[in-house]
Length: 219
Image: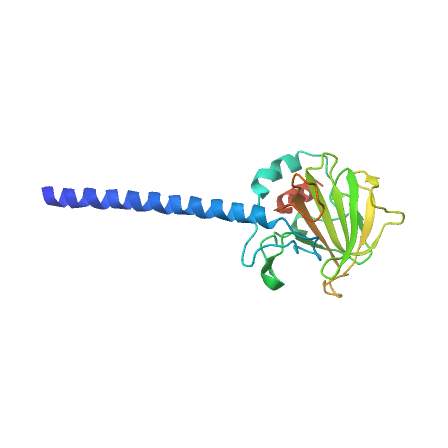
């Protein structure tokens, strides 16, 4: 009986050590991924959706859990009219060509539907890319977040870089420019947390799904 107890104690001790070691290794791996992702954000302007330069095989780290709460505390507006919560799907981690991650939420809508500024801010960049088509990069007033709108059919009349916009202002119209399916017009919406240099093509991807879902639920 005494030997059986000794063997049982040894087994439990080994199991605890194994669990500790696994957690330790996981912490190293996550820390390494964050460090590499931070370095990878230094690059040239993107060609469109999630085209920021990164080392091959590196998956960017989502910081949505840390940013969803402060974003939802802001005075924000759903960027499309008439959207229900069931219309919004969490597609942030879906794969895309070239090993990219989607890093955005697609909201299906009729071609030509007005796209509204999700919050107050400044139109930092109007950019056409092969992937994103007609895109808008909007910086929030504090320069903390960038709101990204892509595949637009066209911009709102008179929209210019440097222009200040208000929550709910029409800034563009739904389309399928870029690499979007011509038969499936939609708004590709993304959020980036800007780095210290405040460059429109750099930033850490934030999952917009919790924010958009909350806005749709509040309608």
